Length: 253
Image 1 (tube, rainbow, N blue to C red):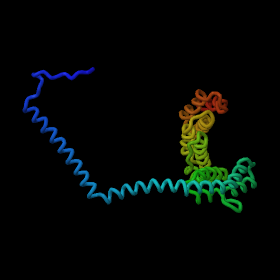
Image 2: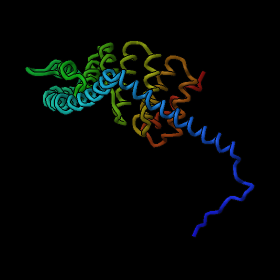
Image 3: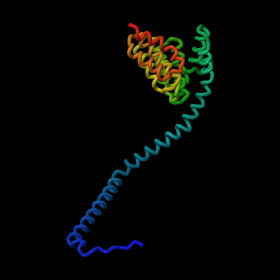
Image 4: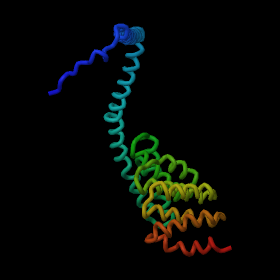
C-alpha cells in the first residue's frame, strides 16, 4: 500500500512563499474568469452574426446532401438512359472502316438521331458522371473527324481516376495536337499520358509515341530517354519490339 510521506521541516515553504503562491493562483483564476466572461460578452454582442454563420454552414451541408440525393442522382440516372443510343453510335463508329458510314455514325453519336446526342448530354447534365464521360466520347469523335480544336476542348474537360482512361484521354489530346501540327504541345501530352497512370499498357504506348515524335522534331536526347525506358522497364511490351529500330535513328548522325 502506498504511504503518504510527510515533508521534513526543512522542506516546507516559507509563509511569504505560500502567500505569493496563493496570490498567483488567485490571479490565474481571475484571468480565466475574465476570459470566460469576455467570451460570453462577445457571444452576446455577436449572437446574431454567430448563429447566422452556423446557420449558413448547416444549410450548406443540408443543401449539398439534398442536391446529391434529390437532384444530382436522379439527373445522373436520367442522363445514363439518354446516353444509351449515342454511345451505341459512338462504339459502332469506332469499329467501322473509314468512309461515309463511319462519319454518319459519329454525327449521330454527337447530335443524336431523333433523340439526345452526346453534345446534349454534356450541355443538359452538367456535373454528372454521364456528362463527364460524354466529354471524352465527344472529344474522341471530333478527333476521328479531324476537328482537332474541338477535340482538345472536350478532352480537356474529361476527368478520370481510371488507370487507363485518364492516360488515353491525355494521349488523345496529344494526337489532336499532332493533327493540328503542334508537335511540341503533343509531346508534352504524350509524356503526361505515359506518367499519369503507370502500367504495362498505356505507359509504353505513349513513351513510344513520345520517342518517335521527339525524333521527328530533332529532340534526340529526349527520344533516347523515352525509348530506353521502354527497353528497360517494359521489355515484354509490344512497343519494346520496335525500340531498337528507333534507337538506331537516335544514334545515327
